[in-house]
Image (tube, rainbow, N blue to C red; front, side, top):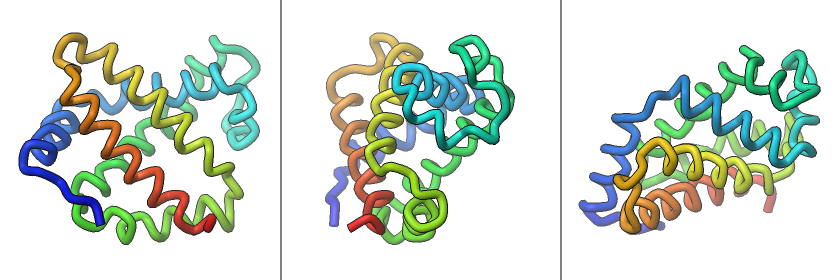
Length: 147
């Protein structure tokens, strides 16, 4: 079980309360698909993803990016039991969708870059350390079914 300080809880809650889900979700997923093109195979049914511009303007990618961020809300609301909160999603991504579990880490890296760019100087060392810890726990929970 992960231990969270009151300060860490406050940082995560505050960060998510100020996020523009539509903007950040779309940009993070688009970045992941462009920077790591082998991840595109999971999104073949999402329409045109043949170029960076097509990915960035694809409404299905944007919608799924928002869905991913709302999925992270589950972790924010269940910080004391993130692994349990993600059991169903772990099974879905492993058993039904057959997603490469390394993609969770790639997407979390892209999400960090997008949020850091949005927050600027507010994304200080303490915020980054806490956010990275949070994402590492989420990624671990999503990978759980793979073990």
